[in-house]
Image (cartoon, helix red, strand yellow):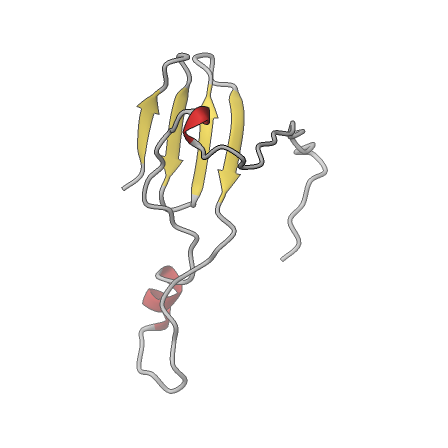
Length: 99
């Protein structure tokens, strides 16, 4: 599952299966873009079900992704809306995820 693929422009496309993340890096290691799957799936625990809690938590909901396949831009059917926007990386010193 997952994988790494060298692209014609010299960049590398990486799919992190367990983290549901696809990203592209330059030969110098700079991240060009990334996508994190927002859909979480996993085993549901039924009330009263006899399940080892540690095992269940370890197998909890994830946003796994099987594989990423690069396709040419012109492969997308004509008439499909195409847009790109720059993403600014957050300041790691002050960025926090609320949980």
